[in-house]
Length: 634
Image 1 (cartoon, rainbow, N blue to C red):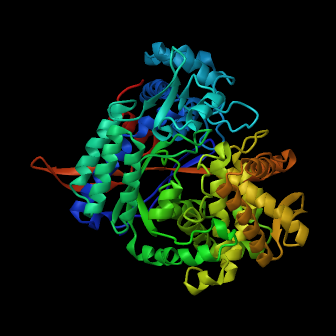
Image 2 (image 1 turned 90 degrees about the horizontal axis):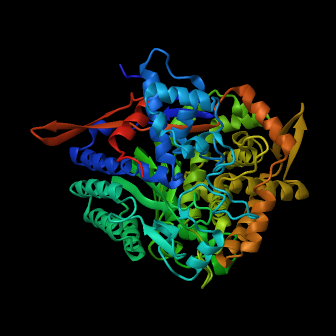
């Protein structure tokens, strides 16, 4: 009898923890299992790097909290509910700040209580003044990432990419063409000079990077093909030298490997957590290709040039020759660093536009992650509460999953890979607004093309009504639902949330002018209603044209106007209404995951197989990772 899959693992604060399952792992050839195992070990050894990048004292905080947690868990008194909630929040966020709002967590216990618990556990000496301030002082490192255009965003952010450096100093340093901004920390030395601490085997994070390199070397023995082996060797060389030119060679090689059944993401990649959008957090995903689903997704990659030619953007910002676009439907097998416990559902890499233009890109949709989200959300009542009509609800239940997946595929495969920069424009020209503008560009590309008849011709959607379903949900989420994720009185900080708000609010404003859409009030509740879907498509297209122009020209003035006017502030009365409506549903607005456990089977001193299991609980996994994949604190 087949065992029922139980997705929900834990729930606390505004978070639910889910499992994801890997289809047919047991039937894989042993060589592929071994490749997955060593790539997964490499993914887990980067965990502490990400913690330290988020907050300089993050590892000390975690070590202290875990020792108190373990002691209390093992004793009859148990863990105080407020302390357990805080520890789990810190685990989930990889630090003391919320993973989405960037605000520091509030605590439900006192300093006196914590000192008593620490004394009982015998670790009161670890409760330093800085750690106590980090927990209790709301003025000490209050934001992980500050994007306030009226302040020094570096000095007002708690991320650990700069030390003793002001925003002006950092911008001037990198504007001069110096340094390795992607993989380093910029510090002010005692003699007043700026110096970079490279993240390499012989530099900062070297002990962890050495272990990642070891795992990559073991993985290389089982690669799917020589191109993948060469990519791993180049990644190792980059970890050793830290040179941007080596990273470029790695990306050019990695992107050419389109056929490997097992693939991976590993390294310092995304820049969302740097307020200047320059320095990259460490992340990893180990991927297993879903071959049958990928064959369908390849249809999108095959029409990349058609989409570019038919895009509403100005001709001078279109690619004349789209190269190397690929799309895979994958199942995640291991998540690490900035992809864990909260993970993306789609990824497009590499990020360098010039590599995308000349060598192409790889896009993935994490199908077992979207499946887990869908299963966990079923029956929550959110759709019924915020949809404007019963017809809208019925349509979403019929087409919602496939239209959401198509949007992600178009966003990652075509959106991020589209367009070109004007000659001489720096990729960093938009500064703190760069990430939001890029995500808006990709979302708009997906919104515009998913309603094209081409999607029906390709068999990617059954009818136009399926595309309209996503238009409803996108506007509903961007204007209403996502506000439930933000604390009262706060602004929108996270780049993806700003992007969705920007698109939905701008489009609502234009839609009200031409009758395409409106926001109505019924029974004291606000709803978004689309009246003319074809007109909405044209509105999305016109905004796409402008957003592409802003990026291509590096127009930071208009980027700032667009983001600040439409993507940041929140109407207080509407926000209060959404929070109250959401609280009545008693559902957690955020989700994350525990990884499966991969266990090597050893026979006569050799790994002969790999077992996979899904029983580990959230706190068990967090504590095990800290024991097995941590080398202490800095």
